[in-house]
Every structure is written in C-alpha cells, then in structure tokens.
Amino acid sequence: MKKSRTFNLLVFIILNFIILAGCGQNESSPKISNQELREKYITSIDNAANVMDGYAKSVKTETDYVSDPANKQIKWINYTKNKLTNNDSNDNNKYFVNYLNGLKKETLEFKNDNFDNSKKIDKSFAKDTSILKKKISVNESNKKLKQAKSRVNDSQQHIISALNSQPHVDGKSVNNSIGEITFNSVKSVPGDDNEKIVEINYTYKNSSSDDVAPYKALIYSGDFTQESDDSVNSLAPGAPASEWEQSNNEIMNMWNDSTQSKLKSGMTKQYITFVKVENNSDITFNAKNPGSNESIGKIKLSINQ
Image (cartoon, rainbow, N blue to C red; front, side):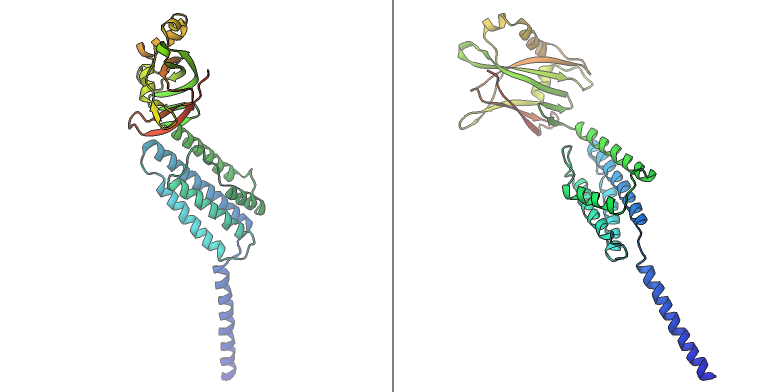
C-alpha cells in the first residue's frame, strides 16, 4: 500500500506539472483574435490623434507639446510589436507588425518636426494599413473607430491651421504677421531715359490688428531680385515715364494709394508698385518673416511684355 501511495503521489505530481506547464504556456502566449487586433488598431488611431494634437499645439506656441504623446505612442508600439512578434497564434499578427513599423516612422516625423503642410503619407505605410484592415476585417462603421478617426481628422485640421498661421509662402502668396500679399501680374511699362520698369499688381489682405500702409507691408515682407549672366541683382523701386503716367490715371492712383494711405485691419485691396529691372528675365520675390528677417521662401514672377 505504501508503495502504491508513493506511486500515485508521483503520478499526481507529474500530472500537475504537465497541467501547470501547459497553463503557463497558454498564459504567456494566448491566442490573439482578430477582434483584439481591431481593438489595438483603434487604440493606435486614438494615440495618433494625441500626437497630432500635441504637434499642432507645439506649432502654435513654439513649446514642445508633442514629445510626451509621441513617446507614449512609441512605447505602446514597441510593447505591442514585441507581444505580436513572439506570438504566432494568429497569422495576421505579422500584418499588424508591418503597420506598426510604418506608424512608428510617422510618429517620429511629428516628434522630430519633419512634418509640413504638403507632406503626403508614405505609400508603403498606406499599403500596409490597407492590407491590415482587410485581413482583420475592420468595420468602418464601428462607433469607437469612427470616434477615433474623427479625432484624427480634427487634429489634422488643427495642424493645417497652425502651420498656416506661421509665416510661409504658398504659390504666389506670402503670409506673415502683417497679413497676406498675393502677386497678380507683372508687366513691362516704359520708363524715362530708357530705363526698364515693371508694373507689379498685388493684393494685400491686412490680417494684423493695426492699420498698415500696403507698400510698407510689401517691403517688410521681402525684396525683389533678378539674375543676370553672372550675378543676382537687388531691384530698386522705379517709376514709369512721365507721359505714360498721365495716360494711366487709374494705375497711378493704385500706386499712390499704396504709399499714401493705410489699409484697415481685416480689409483686402489691390495695389500697384513699380520696380526698375536689369533685363526681361523672371524676377524673384524673396519672402521673409518680418519679425526675424528669416527667409521663408521665394516666389518667381514672369514679366509680361
């Protein structure tokens, strides 16, 4: 009997070891369902919205509000990647890992301030995201997902608004703290003593809180240059020929208005300025930030003969 009890106890211990070992294995590598992956996908989008909100706030205030949410997102990505990489219970884990790799790259772009208004999403990341959504059957009508996506869309608009509020060049326009100047046309007009003169038509939108003289807004926002064969030449203000002035009263009134009056805050109006040029090649408006004189871009302007 003693031998039998000893034998039975041994069997009991071995069986318990096998059962406990099996339980431990299941706990360390539980099966991950597509539903769990869908929930992680929603979490990733929520986290992305936090990163984007932080970036928008950083742009507006010039204070770092993006590092904290970005670091939290990256920490979550690394943890989730490790968990999925070490678990082969769902074939779709590898697609989620590919998605996370791209998401980490995008997050670092925000954190390192490599994002700009014209940036397009990485094609490979977009492809990996599309593949993942199909593999795990993401339901676009899911309430939590719709809420997360709505947050991302709002955050994107906040970023665009924040970037647009910073001094920048957009097409033929320069935007800064004084307002927005848009170049409409440039054409040659006759000058006295065979001088080459161009008439520059521009629109000034005064978005500052003060009344501002349009010509002052123009010269504070940048300067004109033109290239010759071997140099870049700064262009000085000019004046059309006296005879031409007398027959173009409307144009001359727009010129005088730009220097002798101030545009009220919130108003928009067209004006004229004249510049003396070296030749008929394109001229460049070198835009700058009025507060710091820092270059913010260049605008190429062709001369219509």
